Length: 79
Image (cartoon, rainbow, N blue to C red; front, side, top):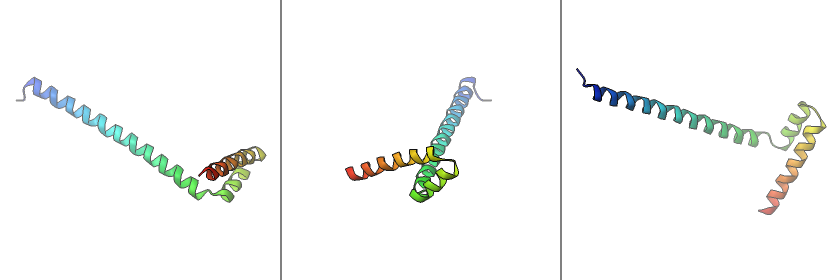
């Protein structure tokens, strides 16, 4: 028979372990999302992005893309 205090300590350790594993899953999910974004940025280079934007409709997206492209050029020029 396990004494009551020992049993309580064991259950609290279990809940802490469960919390840690759920936090680890959250970190993994965040890492996956970041990796996916990096891959998307490398795959959708300039031409693909323009096709993508025209597919989603219109001059508004292209205007946004041109602004973004200009910002990228400025950023590249700064280095």
